[in-house]
Length: 507
Ligand code: AHR
Image (cartoon, rainbow, N blue to C red; front, side, top):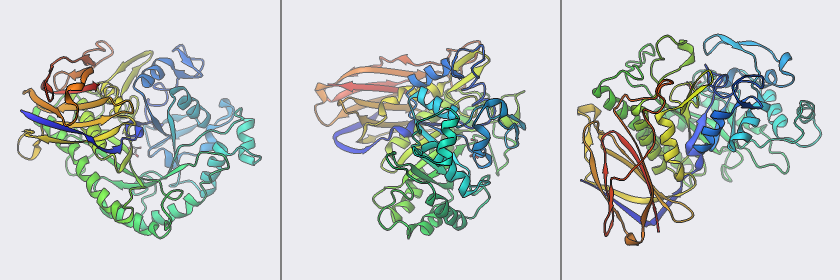
């Protein structure tokens, strides 16, 4: 039996709501069909945005949305996506599937979408194939309220008021698709580009995010910070507010062979544990990149922004390989539950994370087919964990936690994180990573244990490959959870095998 001792007097870091963020790229059917169907579509929409999707994402409490890429961002020329739709340039999306990109979803549509979702904005600028001028004019177009060529153009295009850009990414994966740069070169370019991300009077300052490492490339982190460090003597704000990190879990890929990553729905128990083990690597790389960041920024002012993460499998058979469309099972749910707990527990440094990607691409929360929409197991995990957004992480000890999976694929059985919100409500989220054994967890609170009652509890569980389809959309869904009893010290809980559980305690 595992024991979770919650020290509810040990209040740690704030869990940035943005840890529950999402990523939407002009890739496959994420933007077109998934989010945006156009005003003339028969699918119910508001200004072209699917009503069913917007409603589901609001219910899940999406806090921030990154756009327009990804690799697409470093080939995106924003002026192609403004003005009358009929005269917008058409182009080939060379990176993703070679399909025609008609630019009908551009800057105005992105801000309209975020407005409907009520979420923060994260625009990723083009450093790979764009100029400093192009990026700086985009910022002017989006945020300047005075008289200027770009502000005037925005007004001419129908938007009088400037928008709020909460985050701006200065390049994407510049070690790869964003220009194949070496870290010192990128860092010098970052110094130059960020200079022209102006904060215009009266606007909320734009938080600038530099391109960080791929996986465990610690050298990238070190060199970028080292090259930029002398420029931040008075603190980092206004120069570098975040450094990104990308890490994907590829269940069966070996030796960098992208041709085989494994099926999303057809896998063995051994592969299940292997996947979790690969996902658990996130904890190690956050720790190690964090240690390097601590050397330059001990006060943790630069957020680690894990703005691409999630499971990446082979595409669903018969679909365009360039569209990255994959199904989503209980295995995805376990990976998401475990990873979000890891992020919460590192919330002193991790200030944003965006799962890739929002709809119909990679580890999505929503899949669509024409006018049909389904919520994936990953969707329910985000919804169940939403109460952590903006809450304060509490200190815990997890004792006698067994492991599951054999040999090199061994992982802890239970993953957890615990937070307290502004009203004193405690949220506990747990995963049981075992495929066959339940786990009893004795939960103890160090203060006022007797005063707390369960206000709400829910579970997501099933067999490892269970998933929702358009024919059977509710095979996996959040259900109410009652396998707990109140004890003098807190709560005694039984976590079923292969489950994600959320419990809320209120005085
Ligand atoms: O999410 C798919 C791709 O993965 C993104 O475009 C890129 O940034 C990453 O390599």
